[in-house]
Amino acid sequence: MRFRHRAAAGLATLLLPLAGLVGLAGPAQAAADTTASFTKTSDWGTGFGGQWTIKNTGTTGISSWTVEWDFPSGTSVTSAWDADVTHSGNHWTAKNKSYNGTVAPGASVSFGFNGSGPGSPSHCTLNGDSCDGTTTPGDAAPSAPGTPAASDITDTSAKLSWSAATDDKGVRNYDVLRDGKVVGTVTTTSYTDSGLTAGTDYSYTVQARDTAGQTGPVSGAVKVHTTGGGTTPPPSGDKVKLGYFTEWGIYGRNYNVKNLVTSGSAAKITHINYAFGNVTGGQCAIGDSYADYDKAFTADQSVSGVADTWDQPLRGNFNQLRELKAKYPNIKILWSFGGWTWSGGFAQAAANPTAFAQSCYNLVEDPRWADVFDGIDIDWEYPNACGLSCDTSGAAAFKNVLAALRAKFGSKALVTAAVTADGSSGGKIEAADYAGAAQYADWYNVMSYDFFGAWDAQGPTAPHSPLTSYNGIPKAGFDTADAISKYRSAGVPASKLLIGIGLYGRGWTGVTQDAPGGTATGPAAGTYEQGIEDYKILKSSCPVTGTVAGTAYAHCGSNWWSYDTPSTIAGKMSWARSQGLGGAFFWEFSGDTSNGELVNAISSNL
Image (cartoon, rainbow, N blue to C red; front, side, top):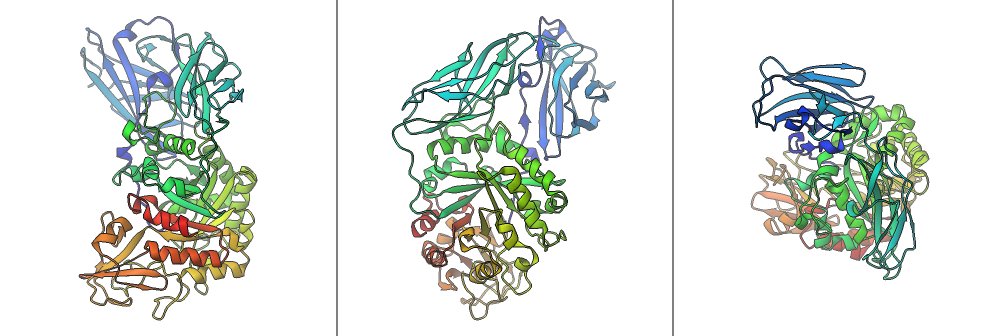
């Protein structure tokens, strides 16, 4: 994908409830009148910003405070402010400064720090007592119960059984979670869930609670498919119909997973690529933790129509995707890593592909969301070539990375990659061993768009996604047909190649010529970025005035745009069928109309 946007980290404040972080039990003393709570203010994958807030809830002021907590191995404080922070091993201590030790009744003070590593604080104490004001330190939270097993499955019910959790003070009960939400609480290690819908997929986990009221980590997930009723039938044919869903679309674009349902698009696709996970330090990492798994969606924003709660184990886009799969069990979801902005980390990944693959597997198969994802997609722009930066990993690097991913994820998971469409002589397709790597991939998403655009501010104007070459094309080989031909000539099977469609246009301003090849003065104005605009806007603001090389263009006033329409997409899908391609993919859902007319054109014509 050529264009990438990320929400600022400051928008993604992640509040971690203290009850889920600390292990505490017994009677409290002064803790009943003071509390300390932790907030993760930002998260950039390899590190995070944190803030502790000390609040005096009593009637008597305090003159000093000391907060202590434990970090797991590999997590540490790198800098701090408004407190003196020290540590002994993994145990950390923060004491007030001279100016902020006094906290009057009803008042609060805070201190902050930057941390490295993925961990969260546990076993918190404030002035020697618990941080939550209810228990004293020393009691650990219960362990995770065993992954539940399902039996006695009917049209409307399923029985779940699991091995017991352990706790030093004893387990009081278990919460049973269906698709991330609590549906029952029991004191035994079995539960029968009823009132289900026939022929529907569900995902169950279990979480233990100890006698002090602390909850431990959730168990692994088990998938249950109720009998009868049938499932949502997959779209006709066996072609892949894949769309990218961007993690940042929930911000300014206000495009949520639920929009896939309301637009009708969910019923017309087979796969979703969730974009993007980061690639940094040679490892797969979270892209935006708030969007991915913490944002609480309201009932009207949620696929299920039920609002997220503060204490459910999984929120964010991941839970919404889980709910989508419950409605459309035929859809497979891949987590895509890299992209234009985050491809720089692949060079280090290529230096140790096995370690990279292990890190990706650990993240994709995290027990909190393992049931959401069916595989991994790699968007490396570009192996052994130049994109945002230039990679010199060598021609074999891409093959080595895909081989390691396939070895780690196994034959049942999907392993795919977004690849260049540069079919020019000596171009990017020739820079890496795509044919050798294809044996490890289920398919390649050939990015057959963004061939031309207003990064060449003076033009010449040209369609950004030509299907074929044409007289006057600015660069030979920059078209879909030449790219597909080059891959096939190198030995990549046609069935492993997907044609790419952009649900947006690229444009210039200062243009007087209607036909392609005109001069310009710069990029046309766009809603989110200069020189680019969604199809849903362009279809009305600058209607099509002509077609060239299998795609459309529009000249309105001094602006010139190129974009695909339902008609040109129909032609491209017909061509893809004639070539025996494996299907089509598109970037990305939010550019389409509210009734998904471009997605419908891809599905119905493929």
